[in-house]
Image 1: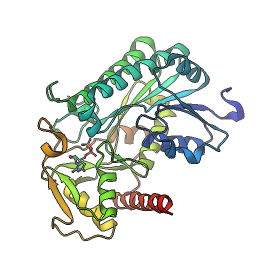
Image 2: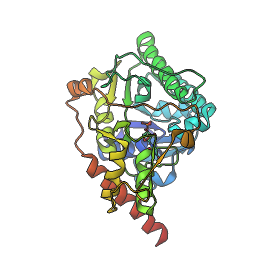
Image 3: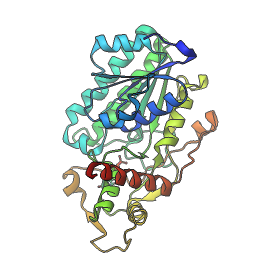
Length: 339
Ligand code: UDP
């Protein structure tokens, strides 16, 4: 596979069959890139990219990013790498921390080693979990981090991604490799699965099924949810910006909403009653959801002035629109599955 034929650039997306990776693949193809994805389908799904497989500019390797021979070939053939492969999701982190730590740390190490061999630019997906339980919102990229003890599994994810960031920045500073790091705050849209804990697809599924929405804790904790289309637009723009190299960027919405209000919004968008009866909303203690040693963040809000200043980026989609899209796409999937 020669790069730069037809004037197009070749992007390699690790974790390209995942929720965000698959939207990124779609967007890059639309922009005229050739896109190769590598995904071991541990959390990614073939259905996420089924609609792309007919496209002659799209290639798919079902493999692990730690398999040196495959990565060596794919990296040698691409112009830019989007490293999206990671083990994410609070449920997964709590249930299988060995897998999470090994995937994130060893996977990123493998990608950077291969990238450095061919001197290829790498965009590394990181996370708002980096900030831990700091209450100093909004979180700026250079802010201090506040993490719980190593005996609480949740913090292993934050730490594993911090190692990824340190390693990426070290490859840049010490070896001159072009690296960009972006920290994704809560991102939502069609194809996200609730299987690993993510709140919006779980609420949307419960709303469609006529089940009560399960709000963990008191529901007063807040998050900001960014539409995956806005997220992907930011990632692509960062990849094309010379000024972004060697820097860290937050990507997220700054529209803060409590989880109880999110539950009501999902119910409303699904055409269900938003009264606070237990048929509509059920409050579940954290211990029942995640076990006794779980710590949640009360608020999580990004400071997005850096990416706004560098690229003029800001989100365009409202949360209402995004939730409406998520519900419509779930209903469509059900109709196809049962039709
Ligand atoms: N949450 C909830 N019900 C669920 C799943 C999650 O109330 O069925 C809560 C969760 O405790 C957290 C928020 O929703 O306070 C966002 O959870 P998610 O796992 O999506 O993201 P993160 O905690 O990483 O921001």
